Image (cartoon, rainbow, N blue to C red):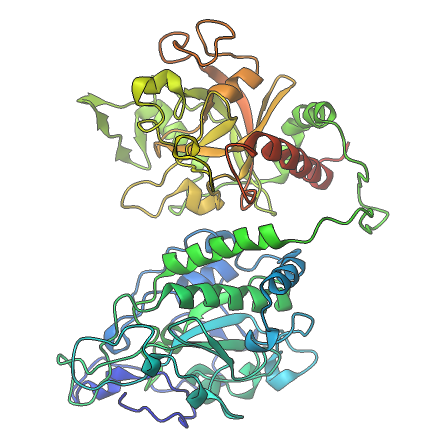
Length: 577
């Protein structure tokens, strides 16, 4: 491993760069004096004991891809959902959901960093008045070191899964995860510990307890392109699905104990710019980690305890609704409140600094989106000017809820009317159900109320889903002129268009689409492909709320019931009658 000793004061992660040759010439800086105001590439602020920027901006810097020999990408990381919206946000009822899940799976908290009722460590070596741990640091062990060669043992090989060698009172990290997803707790998450050069050699004692450290076992070979002594060659993919799943659980456990979703970080990015830094984790897949978090969220929802029948304790000054309102009452309040509630949200901003409303307005007037020419379809140039989005507002609230007003085009995907004899196989939808026969895995637009969300701009950081955190099956409501349709996010469409919904949603809003009134299944749509609503339809979408399980049998009932509950909670929080 190069410098492989497990007694290394910095940790067992390797620094391949130093060993890759005497004449490296990369100009790494010497350790910065501890009294400096800002340290390292991501700007650790010694006075505040945090990196510069918001938690999300910090993560974008600290999760930049790590490459061989300690090279860290200059470009900030693009955070996939749900990371992009949850980092730095309160964890809410996560602790209760985790407790239910751990019980249902008979999982031992001693192997997961400790019990949920204990707080995480605090900075300044555990000082009571110091900030709690903020950073969830991902390392790889860079071991076992396998010397020369290019092939690696199978992931279930004993040599890749032995954890006992990492144990002991001087264990270099809080947690260790082997290739099979098995864990060893080096220190409880409540124990202040240091494992990066920034902590040990630059900031010193004030930083002790600010970082939680997770080591993922990853074997290494010597890279022939480097010097005589290096351990730069890592497997691809770098980690196993079992490791990502366990890492997601550990991240949730630590965050629940901290009370906010912690800021994840890569070891090498933290130490970038410091002499004798590290090169881990190699070949880490952020998308795989995000998928593991999404899967965990689904499992937590399925294992969550039944809701209490008692009214929640709430300060007397807060506007409270202790009794559930009827669908009609909720719908009436929602239609009444939209015009004023919208001002309590913030404009949804794209990664280029412009609001999404501005981008859709640009397309409506000039047929470009963020300066891009629209694609062609069947030899015809697509245009917004002939099917305008007509976005009046597009807002994001501090709890993540999305509210916007636009036109409503017609989506018939998933329905027999456009599938003909090939239905349902040739009318797939973005959302697929959790279970059921093959003919019922896609969402039938004629039977299920759903809204359509825009896909990401190709080869760009601009993405509606990325900025909102909306996922397949999340709860959604469309409403207009006193009518409401409670459903889900069920399909995805072009990046330059917003405002579209299923045949059933149109029917709920008083705009039925079948040319033969009442016909089921419909054989012909009005106007050939349906007649949409030209403007002033309001959409309310709740990210990270996909019901579990979600099937063709329960989708309408569960999306209606839970959608009404979420809408009532939204109105209670943001609308003062």
